[in-house]
Length: 176
Image (tube, rainbow, N blue to C red; front, side, top):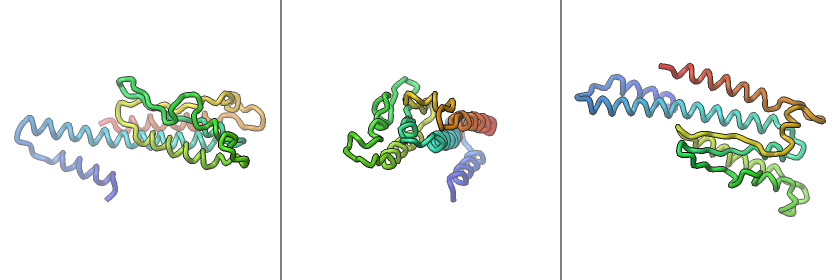
């Protein structure tokens, strides 16, 4: 039984459940709201994962620095913020050339995979009420997005537009 079937089964059970008093009714309604919120959050997290992947995958791959520069942070309603790489200045992406580690071959593929895994984990763990920020502090990002040099422009615009439309569809589908 997949997760959607289990969620729907639980909601059907709660809808048919007979309650004795207002306290039981309140408890059943709270549980229904929690199930709906968890379902909506899972869909939003999936959309955010797909946006992050699209941004990284569509990024021009000259050195890998621009792709690795995409970082994720979350902040709660209280304003507490967590950054996956520990700082907002580029963190792990600064080592992609391999120079600091002594790797003359510039093995940035392993570093990029590690950064992506950490960012994806952060996105997947996002909870209701948290603000998610996907950002890139690499200084030449805007120039590449505009299409400078050999790189084609607009590698971020299309995924961002698709993401906005997807979130609109999700919002419409969850109106009950």
